Amino acid sequence: MSAESLPRQVGHPSAEEFLLTEVLQALSDPLRLDIVAVLAESDAELSCSAFHLPVTKSTSTHHFRVLREAGIVRQRYEGTARMNSLRRDDLEAVFPGLLASVLASAHRQ
Image (cartoon, rainbow, N blue to C red; front, side, top):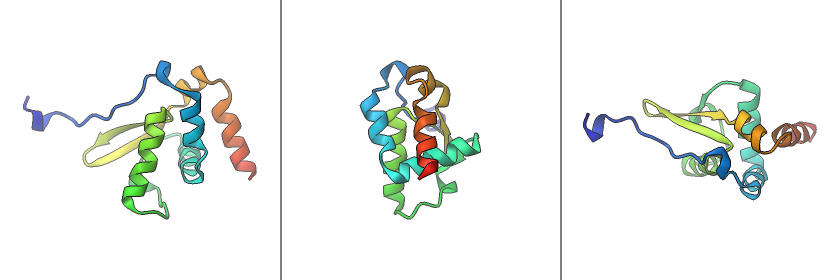
């Protein structure tokens, strides 16, 4: 199999590499928190283009990268689209109740 035919991969931290400060920093941005809330409600994979964010494409890419590098979302390529899913089980295992608390608080606001 040639390098051109290999599927593109996206790097993710393992659950053991999650840092509370990075997760909280990623969730502190209202736009990223909205992305996480939509993923939590959909309970499915969504492409980046499914989110109608009021920012440029490069800024949107930055926000998704921050969420991925913090371990909050998992991304994979499907063709040219990046599909996003919430790493709910991993987050719950490392920080029990954190995601539910943050989402409940965001919903109240």
